[in-house]
Amino acid sequence: MTDLTLLIACPECKSDLLLNKDSYECSSCKNKEKSNFKIIHNVPVLMTGIETDYNQKFWDEGWQNRNEKSDFKFVNLPDKQYKKIIDDQIKQTLEFEKPLSFLNAKKTDIILNVGCGLSEASGFSAMKFENYIGLDFSFKAALGSLKNIRKYNENGITMQANAEKLPIKNNTIDVVYSSGVLHHTPNINQTLIEIKRVLKPNGQAVIGLYNSNSPKFLMAKLKNKINNLFKKETMQWYENTETSWQANNNLNPWSETFSYKQIQDLFKISGLTIITINKTNFQWGDSLPIIGKYINKIKFIPKSSHFLRKNFGSMWVIIAKK
Image (cartoon, rainbow, N blue to C red; front, side):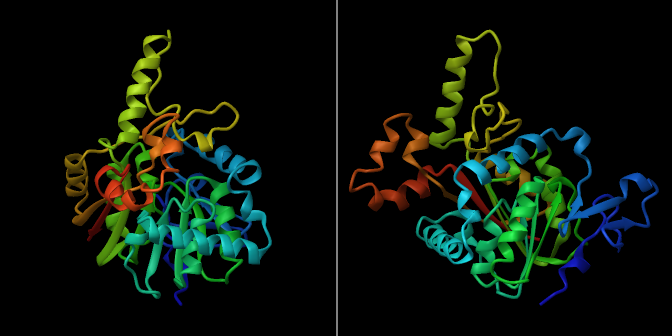
């Protein structure tokens, strides 16, 4: 196993960090106030650039709400029960061709998960990957991920950081995995450039991004246009999406969707070479309001699920290499 802490770098200048008792310090940065990074409950807080990034409150309070009151309460179950749920989630991931099913990596590869959430990190541990780094914009998610990894073993680390300024050394990562995250990043071009920077030569990236032409997002945008006709204040189409994370009257501050052509242009600009582009994540409930959840109960629907995901999925899964 690799000592993953040796791969951590200053998010600003990418230089080595000096480890103090409860913080990391960059000796190369001139601005000392912005180059001292606290370590809280074994999670390095390597945030920078957040002056212009207004996402943090939405995601941090959203993850706390999901952890305490909603669909992620299972993370607080005893270890044995928790592991059973994670094992079941992995089986569903493979069966329903979710983005993680496209990951092709060796167990010894160094994996960077950008946007690790609360339980995805332990999924990598359950799949026996030995060298895992989880990164999330939300401290709640990064801390929760670390606790969940430790239910399996001492492998892996997590940190709070901004995807637009990855605190990782150049050419050190075998696989970057990010599903359902980067379309919430205001400067996705910079993030993809950062992903290329940290990848080893011929390293791979598996990236899940929202599909503009999927029924889910076509319906969301149409619904928003209709609602705006009857409201004095115009809302962006994405503000009432990501409802699972809505807490304390927070609205989703940013989302973006992409066409096939936009995906190609994005990755060309970043310098990453696309290997394949797939679609996944089709759900009737997202595509047809009210009646969608009933359609899922029709017997023939599961048999058509592969066709529906492949042709109408709400998520692009792009596999690219450096």
